[in-house]
Amino acid sequence: MIAIITHSDLNEYKHISTNISAAIFNNYLQEAQELDLRLLLGEELYIDILDDIVASPSLTDYEELVNGSTYEYNEKKYKHEGLKSVLAYFAYSRYLKSTGVNSTPYGLVVKKTDFSEPISEKTLARQISQSISAAHSYWDRVKLFLIHNKNDYPLFKCQVSTQGSIRVTGIGGNSSDRRKYYK
Image (tube, rainbow, N blue to C red; front, side, top):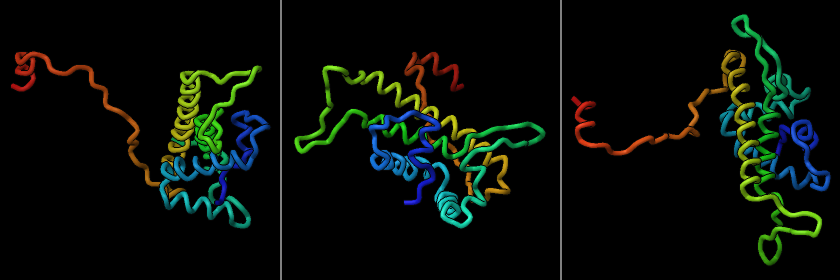
């Protein structure tokens, strides 16, 4: 797989224990790149970015998109941190989801020692949620960059997010209330 971000790039955004091998963490990076970022970018742009990474010289077309930049649009300055930041936080959230869980011949186990204990599920869930939220926040700025520079990035097709939800604030009511609204 062609990697957009490496284990050492990730350390610019989040501290990862040196006890976690790069080979293990690369699995999380690969999942985030293939399952999260690819979906956001769309197939054509994603493949074109990978082609640009392996080209010689590397990143001639997508350097600002991958690494971030400051740019002007309608006489206003904007800044985005690039796809690396988005990918770093998605990968970190995937890492957190399996933190402390070890696969053994007897099933999945959580290691406990006399000197430490795992954090609560609630705290872990909050950490995962914060990481995913940060990834989406960085993505929003990258997406704005792509929209503002749509002539330079014609392969990007802006799509409406399907991650929102519907909030129900009330159900029912009496029939006289309904008659007011449906006359």
